[in-house]
Length: 146
Image (cartoon, rainbow, N blue to C red):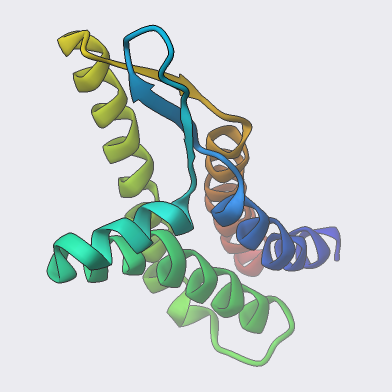
């Protein structure tokens, strides 16, 4: 029963994480401030430059996590068969792909040394949401088998 409510709480936590600052980035020179970057602001910038990449990232960052949470809720409330659970587990893993990409970008930019990047609290919230979603999938699968 608690799994259901924790899963539904993700419907609130994910949108907060999308608008929260993932990082602060800027040029590594004096007098230049850092600009906060969120999932949504990053998507807006991508739509202006590369529509295909923007569609891909939008799917991984926004649609995959929400579809997974909603699908898991339908299973938990008995409105969908548990046969669908493996599909939602795959969606959860796809949602983790964008966190990997963000981490990779941070490492690359810091390695170059021309830019300064500081991680923001939104990155941790977004990561926690995705990991919680994955853990809930496993716990739901275990509970459904019993």
